[in-house]
Length: 318
Ligand code: A2R
Image 1 (cartoon, rainbow, N blue to C red):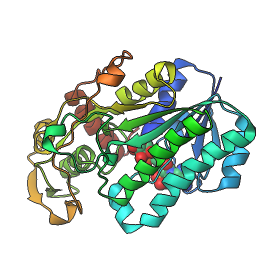
Image 2 (image 1 turned 90 degrees about the vertical axis):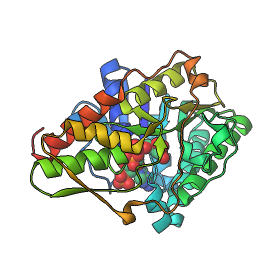
Image 3 (image 1 turned 30 degrees about the horizontal axis):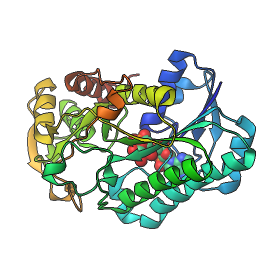
Image 4 (image 1 turned 180 degrees about the vertical axis):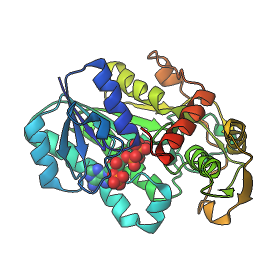
């Protein structure tokens, strides 16, 4: 069996590669963008295949799909940052929408029939009303950023291609996925900031909005969810991947502060507040639960592993 992971050098993609390697699923190909850093996948060199893949390039995508002829495509490549999408809306739309189109188009033109996991986002739900929590897959989309709109479009394109071209596409809406190697979410920013203070690189930790409630799932549970969906998900259908539990960002900070080896002074940073910050984000995972998936890793273990990750990284140890 041949597996292609687009965005394989990214946070979730690299964990997925670890998971598939451990499972011994066959030939794994990491689609690695030439502009990308490889720190997440350096440990995989020599164990799996790396291919240069720019999803914005129709020609490049066609060549790669033609050479590999994958049986499974985990499509994770994206401009995945909400804040970056405000700075570069056009680039975000191109990467996330045209990039997804390029994958489907190449699959059709090559005449292959892989199972494709199209990785979308809870950001598509956008402005969630209090009485809609926990959010089901049937919730209305009220996207609030260019990133969210790009993911709605990817989601709908995936739906359309599954219906009009009979492609075996399963849509996945990830809520907040976190864990070791994650950059630029609250858990990661806090953990890194605390380790900086522990090491004397900084005197205090800057924090943004602590009031928001988020639904965090450990990345190792998330990649297990992708495998469950590959095996048992209905083609054409859509699944939330989330814990179903909300935790206040301030409570995450408190948990991490308890793990610190030094007292850490906190300062509020107005620049760290999002352009639009959604206050309540909890998903309903009933649909994927019925396929036998449940998150297994406790948030305390996730946060402790993130502290270890940053301690190793900042202290220069592997
Ligand atoms: O922007 P970079 O250098 O970090 O590279 C990202 C890569 N990427 C691309 N790959 C191929 N062709 C492109 N034109 C292109 N543009 C960006 O996709 C990055 O390594 C990867 C996405 O990984 P992360 O940013 O770490 O996202 P994460 O958290 O792994 O999320 C995976 C998926 C995304 O589709 C999200 O929108 C979704 O889960 O929620």
